[in-house]
Image 1 (spheres, rainbow, N blue to C red):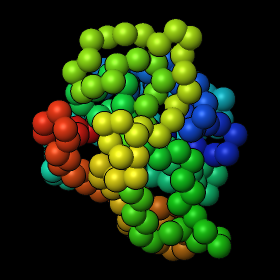
Image 2: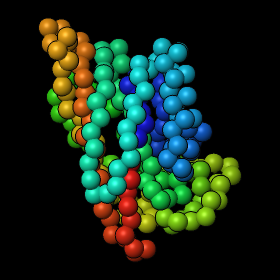
Image 3: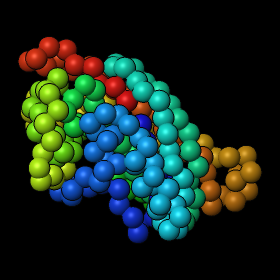
Image 4: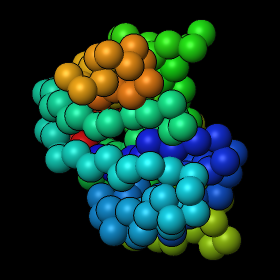
Length: 193
């Protein structure tokens, strides 16, 4: 898993957009170095505050990670590959962890599968077949049904002791990732993060 806390001046991926090299690497191999560089460039430009890194996960299972959020960077983007796969991933883009001038205490989002549009493989173990030119990021309907989530991201606000007197000016968000095992026509899949 990799992601960032950021403001509304940067987007790392979106449905209908073309995958960056970082999104391609993450979706095809699970690698994070290129996307981490893209996030660090956004940090240098003043549009992101932090890189969020998490470990892998087999399915079904759950892991948790924590990260800081602030008033200036209340948005979170997170992605993780579905493995094995040609270029499939799950994630959230630009989720605002604030509403009505306050931190959202608990937020659970279902994770639908996406196709990064960078590999033309149609099955979990398809050979590497680059899509040229790159397609767009789109909801993945095959081999999934396009509407069944593969897991959830749950964000829980855990105030830092030093931030408690500030009443919401900064906080520590705890992310709990849960995956579900999916039984597909090709057999059992393991959705890892």
